Amino acid sequence: MYPISDLTAFCRKTTGDVPPKLVGASTTVVGSKMYLYGGRLVSERKMVSDIYMFDLESFKWERVAQNPEDDIPQARYFHSADTWRNHLIIFGGMAIKPQSENPEDLCVLNDVRLFDLTNRRWLPAAPLPADSSLIPNARYAHLSSVTADRLFIIGGQDLANVWLDDVYIFDLNSQMWIQRRDYPRHCGTYRSVAVTADQRVRLPQEEMRGGQASARLGPVGSRFKVDKAAPPAANATESDKLIHLPYSAQPTEDYPCDIFLFSNYNFTDVQRELEVFTPLSDGDFTVSDRSASMTGTSFPPGLRFPTGAILGTYFIVAGTYLSQTYQSFSIWALDLINMTWSRIDPGSALASGSWFRSCLWASANKFVVFGNRNGNLVEDYNRRLLSWDHVTCIDLEAFGIYQPPPLVLDIPMQELGLAALEEGLMADFEIICDDGRRIKCSRKLLEDRWPWFKEQRRIFIQAATRALEAMPAVSSHTPLPEVASANRQEQRPDPRLTPRAFNLSEPYPITLALLQYFYSMALITPLQHAPAVLSQLLLLASTYQLTHLQSLVKHAMHRALSYATSVGIYGVSTLCSCRSLQIR
Image (cartoon, rainbow, N blue to C red; front, side, top):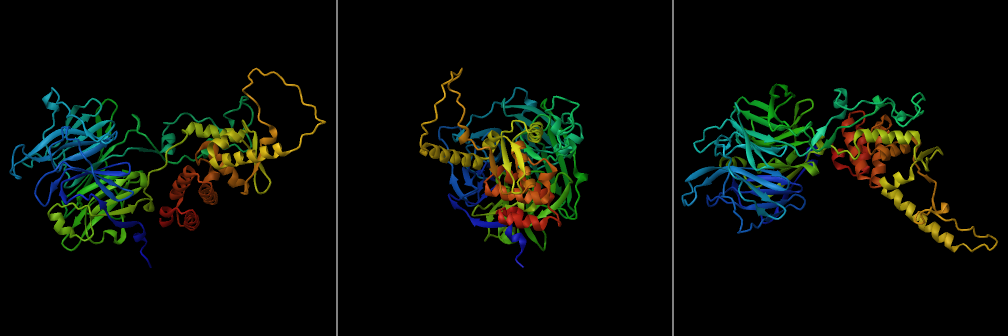
């Protein structure tokens, strides 16, 4: 049989201004672009301050021109690079001493430099604080991450290769160093990685169980009732029966994006550590040790120079695995909900060649690995050599790893919308199901949230208008006298041009589930989560090009996938060209 893992990854040759082979360069993803900065040329042992941009959609490299009038940073390698508000943030690294012509005459750096990606200009260097205790030691091969508008610099080594066991925090808004703290572990890029995410995944079911949500008000259908003693609508959905899926949201003070620091060491008998840095609103942070919580039937081997990322509720780590009998580029994922490890199998795409640098393309749910499929992994590792000739894209959604869709309406508004449908409020229209049953709803709401419906109504009005204009005038009809209006601009539409009902050739449950979506912009009722209904909703989303509904249904199907539901999900995902879901 054809290996299923080979469907999850593909390899392509890169084009354009392909960078030369480098040592110690950084890679940073911003949207659908990846930026490569700095490094040391393998051919000349010369350090560079070049910037290359890689288009993750076209696989094409572009060398970014830098303005010669800017204060271009000193060339370096084994520095750190992060992104913040469409800027690259470069810190530290190792460089050749200024005015020295000897490539072995090295120094280490502690400067923070920002490159504006919008106008492609370097910003002036940040001033050093008056308090010398807040100035970080110069370092290289350190870890870094950005969260809550703060740059965290963790660990690394000085020029004498002495470990620097500390954490420094740089406030990106004020451009000032604001805190230093001891950190009782050795951390460096050889064996550790620190990552965070742009978005936080919220778990509303857990938050509500923990009492963090606002008080629930009984049956959803009773929210609009003036008479509190009156019974709820017959079809009202009880609040405790509603299903709120995890969703992506921008971080807040209550729900910030944590930094996950993973280390592995003692590669003959691998030890693994996971610590979580949580930023606080007062500028401080807490550190919690999650090492003992990690479980699984198998664990990552010792990974050298690991890279990592957060996607959805998963921590992803990848790196070079070397043993006496086997060498590979290995990718693993940790489910941060149940703390279980699993291996990401890219099939034959990475089975040969030299692969070392990886990054996450979060908006596409893809993991991207750079290298040379004709290279030798062991030889290139020994030289710390990074190649950019080929790229392998791995579909993480095929493994159930993806960014959940964000909310369109917040949860109280979802429930109020559902209540409006169940109570028939503002209902001036009807959807007629294929069995003749009718569901009252708001025509205006459907027009606002269903583009196809709005277009069909426009076509109907145009056709009806032409038909009315073609009708002969009847002379026996005496025109009615004109009645003065307080606002002559507000004219009622001709009732003959306003359809009152629409026939949808779907069963009543499917039609109701679709209307529940339009009113709540979510999948929150037990009806909507029934496997057969989810399948029909995916077909409707594909037919009417409702991309948000499609993303919600795929999200629900991923969570509901089991041996019992797999056949139905496979069939409908094939019909709707949802390849990642189909593969999984």
